[in-house]
Structures are given as structure tokens and as C-alpha cells.
Image (cartoon, rainbow, N blue to C red; front, side):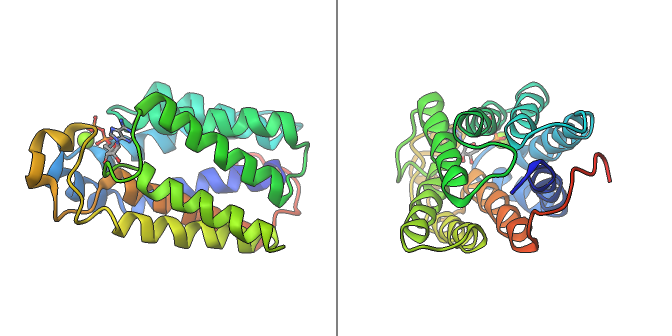
Length: 221
Ligand code: ADP
Ligand code: MG
């Protein structure tokens, strides 16, 4: 995946988030304050604008760092700093391991760094009913596919499936982090909105890696 591919990931995520914003907000209304769809829609719209403003000689690392910065500054709620940190950490990992063109191993290292960033900042473990419950199985599935020799598209698809299953697994859980934890046992029986949006982000990655990332940087097109 090259810089154009990374930019397509951000744009496609923005598209999926915007299409699903009402559902995310509804999920958050059930166990939080009903702003998750709006928060992320605003954040990823800002991320797309930041990515579109990058010069033509950019790299995948710079694309993700720019997107992460925009999300931190424009997304409200707990999820803004968490997703912004995730993207910035992913970008920093790519700056170390990847060049202009990422391979499956470099993208895996980036996803692992994103997860570490989220857990460092949010202090959530698996089972706390947060985005971590989608991100951990995504990274685990990605790494398992990678170890089995899968290409980048198959690794990303495994991650997307892992994230979707991980998100579903939050339904029976009682929240131990974030706003939903204020509800105590009443938070059980609902899908965690952040886990649902993490599944969208990984779905977007699977979609764009399946298309292939061989074409040149295309700016705002
Ligand atoms: P807020 O809860 O501040 O309104 P959002 O509605 O945008 O923020 O995001 C809520 C989501 O953020 C939750 O569904 C959960 O997945 C995630 N979240 C909240 N706190 C944490 C945390 N400490 N660690 C990881 N994820 C968290
Ligand atoms: Mg909220």
C-alpha cells in the first residue's frame, strides 16, 4: 500500500462513518451520550481535508499522522484522542518500518502500534466493552494471517472479520471504561459504539487493500 492507498483508507473510512453515523449515534445514545456518530463524522471529515492538503511526494506514514492529528483536534469525546493517537502511532511505526510502499508486515506493525497507543491512553483491557474489544481480535487475526503467508489484502480482510466479531462480542459485556461504565450492569445488552466504529475502520482497510494500492498519489481526487 502506498500513500495513495493510505489516503483512500482515510477517505473510505470517512465515507463509511458518514453513512453509518446515525447508527453509531443510536448505539451511543443507548449506553452513552449519543454523540459518537457525530464525533467521528466530524473527525474523519477533518482527516480527509488534512490528507487532501498534503503535497504530492507524501508517504503512507505522513498520511496517517496528518489524519491522526486532524482527528485529535476535531473529534470530541473519548474516541477522538483515542483514534487520533491510534492513527498517529500507526503512522510513526510506518515511518520506522515502511517506506513509500508498505508490505503486509509493515501494516501489521502499524496496527499493533495503534492498539498499543489506544491501550496506553485509555487503559482499557479486553472485556471492558470498548473499541479495544474490536481492535485486539483485529490485530490478532491480522498477525495470524500474516504468519500463514497471506498477502496484505487477505491479512486486512482477516482483521476486518476479527474486528466485526470482536464488536459483536461486546453486546453482553458490562462496560468498565468510558461513559457507558456509569450505567453499570445496565450497559450490558448493547453493542459498544466505539467497537462498532473500529469494525468500520478495519472494513475500510480491507476494502482498499482489496482494490490494490499500486496507483500514484492522486491528491484530493
Ligand atoms: P464519549 O464517550 O466521550 O461521548 P464517544 O461517544 O465518541 O466519546 O466514544 C465512545 C466510545 O469510546 C466507547 O464506545 C468506547 O468504545 C470508547 N472508549 C471510551 N473510553 C475508552 C477507553 N478508556 N479506552 C478505550 N476506548 C474507550
Ligand atoms: Mg459519546
